[in-house]
Picture 1 (spheres, rainbow, N blue to C red):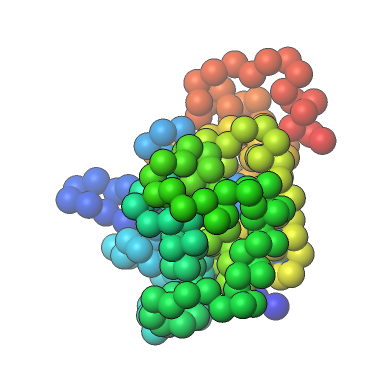
Picture 2 (picture 1 turned 90 degrees about the horizontal axis):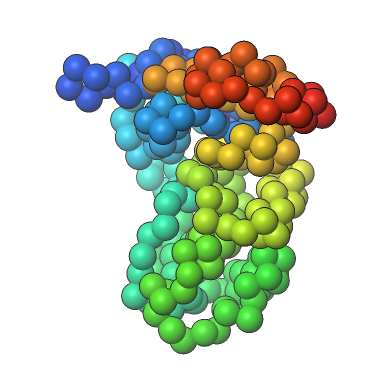
Length: 251
């Protein structure tokens, strides 16, 4: 089985500034990859380029070894699923979740019985099922609750590739763990997940591989012990790591 996502010398340039430059990597099915780096490193730009939400200025993005630009809009919607920072909505929870079925239906429809069952399963797994039928506007829920529902919407439909921008940033510790367990189930079915993180310890626990970015370029792609070495952390984040970190990364 080929790579679910490949970048071949991909750059995104705005004006005279390269937001990402000369990016090369492959993501294999059945893996979680964490994308880490300081603020402004280019993580969101890379994710958006991977999702074809931001066109590459040069190079090629491939999905399942096929140029992503060759996919029709419907094919693209089915191949990759995208979850970004919180998107507000005045709809109810079920209204927001119904948008998750759009790639399959090609139009706005109520959730089917099977889809509603899947929603209920995901909500129960993430422990937000008591809120599912809450009639309040989605905007009135906490940021963490909204993020969990956005993840439910993202994982409502199966897809080969999931691209997630800081999926657990507003979550408490328990819900971070529940989301990590969900990721393992999803990749266990053969999908690939690429998710950005600022919390390096969380990223190293959740992911099979770490991709590190700095100033628009990849500086590492490998295990947590390799990518998040004391030397890399000091060089890229300009901080000294506590003495217990090297032992932690090596696990």
